[in-house]
Image (cartoon, rainbow, N blue to C red):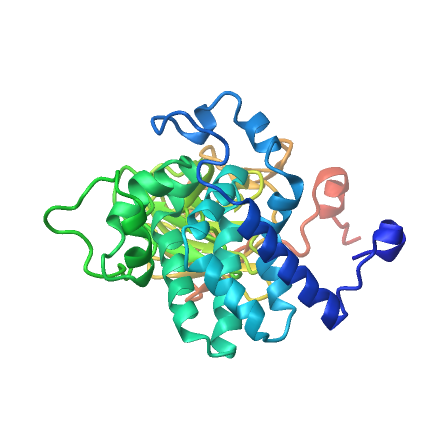
Length: 390
């Protein structure tokens, strides 16, 4: 914490005693203040987004309870093992309080922080060999991973839709279900154990051809035969689609990849183009990268993010500059600049396959027309193309 900003309220979190006190206090606040249906939601029929006065109800949750719900695990992480503190963690995760805590995580829309908190606690307990409590926390992690979208979507369905479908042999299930009698029952079938898959992402309307994680593991990009790319937030276990689908390809998307910094996505398609997308803005950057004469089925960024490589059914690989201006070979044979400048006209016989302006290399060499523009005079310098030999 910042001493200059906090003044007399400053707490030195580097002090072992202070971090331990903060962890104790946060857990005590959760124990004393968490309760069932804390926002008094009258019906389970509505998504959180459809509850008109939900923000007012959330504002009525005490500030110290909201803080403790989000940061109790962080304070625990900064504290060395303490038996009394571990027993308080066990009392919290080994009771219905853990579900009441998930209510607040749902209402605040921070399911990702909830999952991270449980993962932090699991690590702390694993290091300190508190195995019975660790098993409960691991069940809590599986609960959020498998029902994160439900938890984020509608708070009552933490109970209505998540609890009935937990594996009956899970320790968390055997602890909680006897306390909740008014739930749907699974008469036949049901889960024998936690599914191996953690999330199921829905949205594409046709087969998904390619998927990739961002380097930090927080997002996934998918490419589909429905001609779109979609970006998903998977950090919180909810598998929520971020923004609208990325549209532009005219045939199925066969390959996708994140840049190393996670800010851009490259895609290849059976429309023979490579496209680059801005993740934050959800828009295509510049014009499509054209040059391949058949579908592009593989794309990747270089480790420094400055170049892109693509592989195609035309039997070539192409290496492209990631940063490129919107220079394009048009159907009429003209290569035009970003503002429509006439740069060069290409004879029809040489237009396909063609070595694009922003292609660094084509493999193998000799399979398409390549130009050497290093000596080309153009624009206001075009007259320099003539040198008198007198």
